[in-house]
Length: 172
Image (cartoon, rainbow, N blue to C red; front, side, top):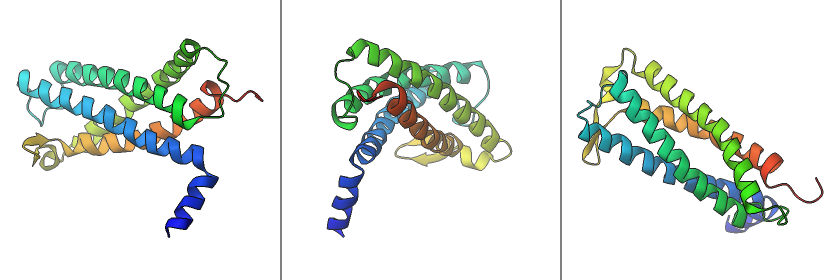
């Protein structure tokens, strides 16, 4: 079993490393997102069941923006160092980072729309899923489910953008 996994990893090293660091990036982003979201709900007294209104929208937007910044920086440097090892190293870091961040802005839009849209859709008429005690806090399961779906879409899109536009090999 371990030999088969090593063989599979060896044949698809770049994709395997991308998935590993993509998952780590997702955890970094989610950690930042949920600290801000849960902390903001506590500080501004926004009930866990509230997923509409100006206060929630402002908090959600701030959490998304700060999460995005942390995740982009983490992903860029890990992808440059350990994932796309065949990429042209002559391209200046700032140029790569600019293209990388631009692509991530596109997928931030996807993440934002998918997460907010699905949270609203899933929360509609299902209040029992919006206030679940977990790890000492009350969580909105519709937000969590929406974030999981958005993450899957974003990881695939980010790989395509990184492979085709950011970390190109010299041959391209």
